Length: 115
Length: 117
Image 1 (cartoon, rainbow over the protein chains, first blue to last red):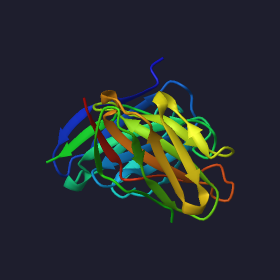
Image 2 (cartoon, each protein chain N blue to C red; image 1 turned 90 degrees about the vertical axis):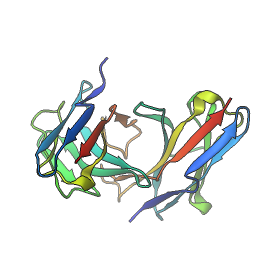
Image 3 (spheres, chains in turn yellow, blue; image 1 turned 60 degrees about the vertical axis):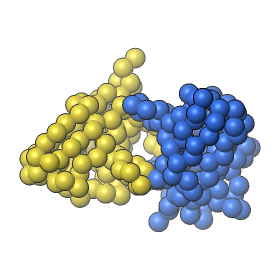
């Protein structure tokens, strides 16, 4: 039972480079989410997806792009990384969306440093 | 827009002490409430959640939380903490946005709990 996996777990990149963070879940959950975790801000939603090919912006979407061609994968791309995107990124999923009684499950996180 | 406030950034306790972490939210409608825990080096795990019914909710590892609608609060409690409770705790709120299938999950800033043996 793999659950949610994220790769890479750690990434160091330079300003201006494109970076893609991968998220894979094995439960066939409909809803998937990307959050960033920053000291003093808790977790903030970047993008979410209600199903394959359906995505929408969250609280802090600027500078990020997502896609969802397959239910189990939800990659997050930083098109041109900036230092302000240095953060820990968490992917999450649940079956019916957070308004339901489902539990939202989180991946282990990716620690991204932009130099 | 909804917001969540956790009163304490860092709480330090000795083992066997009682714990109460504050959480207040701002939203006037129906809400779903959560407490998540993040142990050092691990991902977030659900401690407990409230959707409806009894406002006193019991979760895993001896934690409980009480929803007080009039105070817009959902404080987390544990009568006797252990060293293994050292972690960061997040309160989260999901507003039932007019009954649509998705309502944004908003997290508080987090409270770091350090328990000394």
